[in-house]
Length: 518
Image: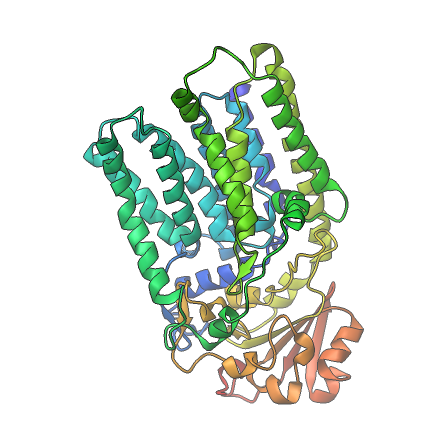
């Protein structure tokens, strides 16, 4: 029975992903569309080759490569869900490895697992979802290797892990290098300095690759390397939030932006588990200062991560920065808790289990509500032709299940993921993607006047000619606003399903809308 418990927990934990057709993840449709470009790049019906060129050397490509590979044998949405599910479950496995390395009971690894449905998940930061388990598992490996003599294979394993972050997330590559460096500092007087330096040298290839690509296309914005869209995005000033506001937002960052006090209840249970673990810790005997410094290496590492969360800007260059760090800091904090005295271990374990059960139940309930709320899109996309142009006009971006998170923002990208063709805005505009627009193929002239955040700026006369399909989310009032009256007077035929509207422009033979030149 006990041997089946981890499997049952794993199935229940990822079940929410599989009860919905489309996960409530903001960027996920765009990431899936990029995966589709890799998978069907040469398919003439989808028309990707004429518009995009591949950039497989670019950072942050692992999710796209894994999903595109699985899409050879599975539907692409199933492939994407499998990768996301594996990344969530891998957090539990990696946390368990770090627990064992720190001499903590296995049930303590449930706390990092409970933190996986966080703001990074709902924003669809799939690269972050892959980075969390790699960060935890890499630390477990590095912590063990730093106590051993240097050998070629483990050195290469540590170097390979660091390099793998290049394909996952550059920000977490730097966090991982800093974290391993801190683990080495905590051993400095206990271990031979030369040996520690040799182990730290394994980080150099990955850090060098990270700094090289950042110097080339991230820290600056050279014309011809960065698209005009991204140049404008990066010109925005950084946004810094007061520390008090960051602390106030922390429950939603760690557990999701629920409309009620769910995130605060979960945060309270998490804090209670931590307080009980500290209060009922196995006190043992006093240790020398250096031994205490080593024994608390994970706790001090968590402290550094929390400082980063508080001092980093919230947004810089159009990208979320600080919010990505908080879940990792909370995961390390949970694993850094002291060993609990045997007499109180069941009590603390029961509170930890309560966090997991409550989070699992609330997540599944919200996903089931979202399934009904988002219904209809798959039916509409199924009836479209492949390789055309689709304009997304998402007036109602948010879900009642997670207010404040624009989960529907990039849902038009599902057309590109399933049928190919083009949409108004694609992540191919961004530097760190595996597919980019060919020279002259970006619709930057449209993006200067109208984008996915501002559907009210859409003008059918000026912008509609490049699209065959128009996907609207909203009610009749939003439809009328999008087309300045009845779409039928413009010659558009329409269908509706749920809160989705799909309008089609009649196109003369030989002139598909998605291939009309600017």
